Image (cartoon, rainbow, N blue to C red; front, side):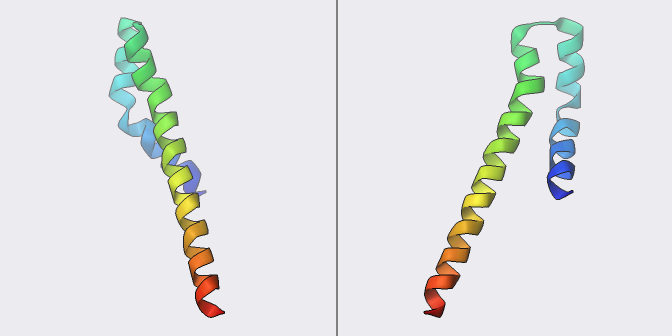
Amino acid sequence: MNDTKNLFIAYLSSLSSFLAAIETRTVITLVSAIILPIVFFAIGKTVDVLLQIYLHNRKKDGEK
C-alpha cells in the first residue's frame, strides 16, 4: 500500500506537466510527464530495497 501511495504522490506532483503534455503534445513534455515519474519511483524504490538489504546484513553480521 505504501508503494501505491508513493506512486500516486509522484504522479500527483507531475499533474501540471501531464496536463501540459496533453495540451502541447510534444515529445519532451510527454517524457517529463509520464516517463520520468516512473523512472524516479523505480530508482527510489531500488535504493530503498538496497539500503534495507544492507542494513539487514549489517545487523546480522553484528550479532555473530
